Length: 278
Ligand SMILES: [Zn+2]
Image (cartoon, rainbow, N blue to C red):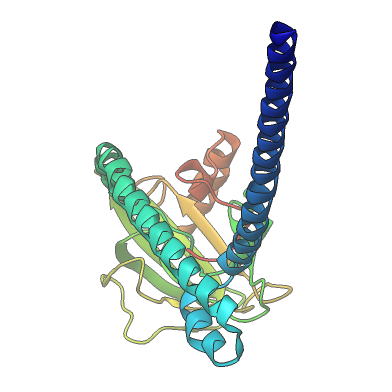
């Protein structure tokens, strides 16, 4: 009987201890459930606020919000300020990494510098803006160039050279020609239909691509304001050049060269149909 009572007591004690342990576990479970939930809830709020603040600059918010925002928001803003300081540090780290990336490009920089100093361009377009309406062919060994902005464009030499002729043709077209010496080869550029010449021009005067020759016009046989530009590989008005010692020879030689495939300026540079600057 005593053993039975002892056993009963033991069972009761075991049951009680089991109940205590189970309730304790439940309470622990409840705590584990409740506490993390509350923490998560607050954290979510802070996180949302932080995310909302990320879109705005914090410095402005920290100055303006304390006046009207509740204390909780102030506390959050202070925490966010710390977070953003951390972000700032992270950004600084990223900035420090960027120079490291820039240390690699220096190998490219010399290449860029080489690209920045290409071989000097010898031939240029004769106007700041232009539109080609006619290209060289037999009987018209020149480009006809109009102004896309409907004005008398200033005419510039297509290359550095020396003025070899300032004259009018039989129809009254104002013409100027320039002799170019490129690596010992002689070229002549001819500009026709000018409305007027620039000042202080004379035969024998050296000119550069930046020296104005005159204004685009429609003098002589012309249907409208345009530049008639011919560029040939001969020296016009040079008695030593049998192909171009006079205008008739120049005309015949130009047709001959165009038939051979020589396209004047296009034979020496890419001439776009339209351009906005030289
Ligand atoms: Zn023409």
